[in-house]
Length: 188
Image 1: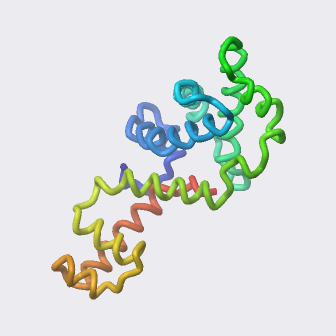
Image 2: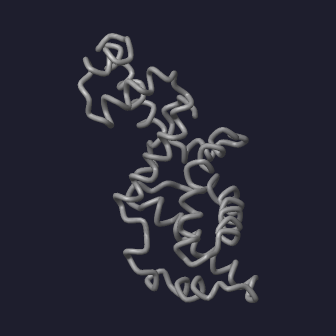
């Protein structure tokens, strides 16, 4: 992950920004796969859906203009749904009846079948944290995790890890700052 303060969506607009694309795929491929499964696709078809959506996004995202008044998630879901429709049209012999039925219109997908705001945010934060963990030393990561996520007092965490309470606060600051940087513009 990059330490630049620019949002991921902005970095995707830069030519040959392979790290941004890798980060985008790591964050969003599981979400697109999840949506594909919710649309009734089998695992193989959902994996194909992810590949096709990503191929479309390689073309579309460099020109994508982020509008803070609209939701990126909704745009991405629309691209995914339209790609699922295309997949169904190209593969009529496969059992994609559920996709065809649900993809008839976005309104046909029950609201409880879509990622709600909290679920979407939780998904992105969890995925970003999973990806970020490898960029921190184990002690830094554990100090932040135990103090912030587990809600343990800094003094207890410090004692357990053999560091000062101030080091726990510094770890918390570094990890949360990095998380904010990485999710800038994605949690609309």
